[in-house]
Image: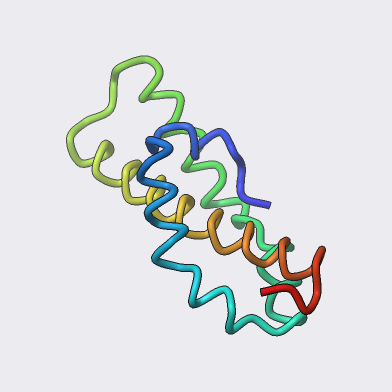
Length: 97
């Protein structure tokens, strides 16, 4: 699963809007696709970079370029997290929806 630490930077209303926008996508999942999404992990290089950027963000030492990179990662993680939640719902309640 993608680390939930990065999700906390997106306001709840934005995540709700994203979930609503992606709801039709979730209806297209097969059980196999849903399971693959649930099992999705960042590769070690990406995870290390995220941790480095998160530390620098906490310390207040991100450059503008790094801030843009970090925000791009956070938005991508939010997107993936919504898809993973939809996939879990499908796997936990087959035939619902």
